Length: 98
Image (tube, rainbow, N blue to C red; front, side, top):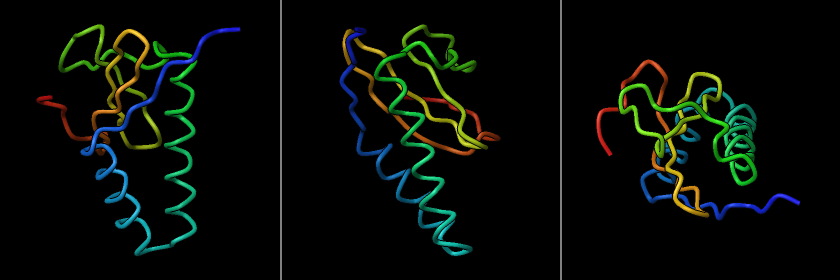
């Protein structure tokens, strides 16, 4: 059985997720909660498959990767046995700094 990585959400990433929920729920609460669940489900896959995401093009670092969920980029760092969720933002924006 493949060992699982520990999943850590930074304060920034947790806040990003709350803001996404707040923004979408203005149109439809059920859609907002479903979308947040979809993001969390994608992130949970990283526990078993930390290399699942692509390397962030703006950074070109092997330890900073991202998964795409709909039109959002979930950026994370791999570190030994940890996955650290750094930030979540709309896909049309560039990721410029850590």
